[in-house]
Image (cartoon, rainbow, N blue to C red; front, top):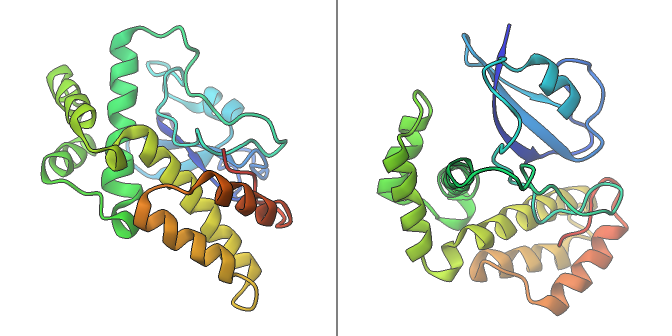
Length: 212
C-alpha cells in the first residue's frame, strides 16, 4: 500500500507511528492517507518517507506546528526546505489556511467561511486548481488580523497544548490554564506577559512543550 502525504500536525507523545509502532516523541506527526482506502494514518518522518507514493514528496508539506517548540526545546517545524518555488509555496500556504479554518479551529474559534468550506470539501476528493489556490490566498490576504494564517497557526498550537495541559492537571488545578484558553478564544492571541506565565505552567506538565 502507498500513502499520500497530507500535512504535518501536532500530537501528544502517546501517539504511535502506524508503521514502526514507536511513540512519536517529537510531538509532531506526518498525516498520511492510504491511496485506495482513504484511511488516515500517523507516521514519523522516516517511515513516512519510506511509505509515501513515489509520485509524492514530503517537501513543502503543509505544516501546522509552527508555534510549538520541539520536545527537546528547539524551534518548531518550519515546513519545507526554504528552497521551494513560489507555486509550491502558494499551494502549501493555501492548504494550511483551509485546514485551520475549516477543520482544526471551527468548533472553538468559529472560523468557517462558506467559500473556503466549498474549497475544503472539494479538496477531500480532488486536487485544487491553481486558480482556486490563488483565490484562497487572496481571501487570506484580505482577512482581518484575527483570521490571518499566522494568527490561526498561533491559535491552533496554543489551544492544542492548553487543552492537553488542562486535561492533565485536572479540575483541581487547571483554573489558570482554562482562563488563558478563554482569553485565546476571545482575542485569537495571548498577551506576551501571559504567554510567558503560561509557559511556566506548561514547563511542569510532562509531555507538554513550550509555546512560541
